[in-house]
Image (tube, rainbow, N blue to C red):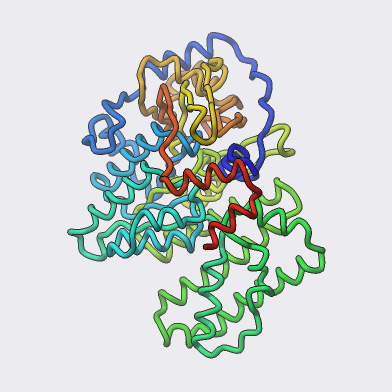
Length: 462
C-alpha cells in the first residue's frame, strides 16, 4: 500500500480518497462578508516557534472558559507548520492554563510507553517513537520535541501535577490483549482463550490496513467466533476483578479492563463490512476511550486531544465518492457528553509544496477558491492566526456563509462539513512544508512505496 493511501486512510477515518464535490453556491457578498469579518477578528500569532512565549495566545485564556477537553485538529498529518503551531498551543495550554494530559490519535497500549517516559524518563525516546503503532503520523522531529518538552516540564513537579500522555485509537490492540492474557494467567484464572482464538495472528504488525485486508477474507462464522471470544475475555476480566486487584491494584484492574475493551472494539473495526461501518466503530471507540481517560485516569484534570480535523469535529462530514451519507466523528459524541466543556480547534492552510525526493513524494498545494474554507482564510492578510468562530453571529452575512456546508482540505482531498457546527476555533498557516520524519520512519516510508503491507509490517514486529 503506497504512502499517500496509507496516510489518507488514517487521517480520514475510513481509508482511501474521495472526489471533490462541486462548489457550494452562495451570494458573493456573503463570501466577502466572511473574509472581511475574519480579517477583523483574526488573532495574529507572532511566530510558529514552539519555544516562543504565549504572545498572541493570551485571548485563549478567556475564550476557552471552563473547557476541560480541547481538541487540536490538523488538515494533514505531515505538515511541519501545523505541527509547530499545535506545539505552541500545547505548551500554552499546559504552562498557562494547567492542562495535564495529552491524548493522541495513537494506539492506546502503544502510547503507554510515552506516558512512562514523560513521567519518569523510562526508555530511549527515539526508540519509543519508532515503535508507535502510528509511527507514520507521530514519529517526526516535530513531535519528538513536543514529547521531550513535556518530559522536561514534568521533572520538577510532584507526581499528581505531572502531564500524562494517552492514546485512544483502537486500530492496534495486540500489545494490550497480550497484557490482558498475561494478567489473567498471573491470577491462575481458567483462561481458555489464546492469541489465535482472539485473532492476533491476523493482526500482524501495527499497520492496520493490512489487518483489515486479512479480516476481509474471513468467513462469517469465523467473525462470529472472534466476537464471542472477545465478549468472553471481557467477562473473564470482570470475574477476576478481586484477584486482579489483590495481585496489583484497582487502577491496574481498570487498565486491563480497558485494554480488553479496546481489543473488542478493534475486532469489530476489522470485522466491519464497509468503510461507513468501520469509520463509525472507530469514532465511537475513540470517543469512549477519551471519556474513560477523563473519568478514570485523570478525574478533574484538563486534557488536550491531538487528532485529525475529521476526528475532533463537532459536526458530521461527507465525502462523496468514498462513502454514502455522512460520518459522525468522535467530536460529536464528546460534545454531547461534555457540552461546553469540549472545545474543537480545526486547522487550515493556504499553499505550499513537498520535495519529490521525500515521502510521500512531490506535492504542490495551489491556491484554492474562496468558496472553500481554506481559500477564504487565505484571503486574510496574516501568515498564521487564530479565529474564534463563535463570534460570527454578530455578522449576519458572514454567519450565513459559515453555516453552509463547504469544502475543507483533508489530507489529499476535501471533506464537506458545516464550519460553524464543526469547530469553535480555527487556526491557519499560510504556507506549509513537509514535516521531518525520523531516520527510521523515513526507511519505513520508503518501504511503503516499494513493498507490500505485509513486508512493512514484518519490520514492525521485529
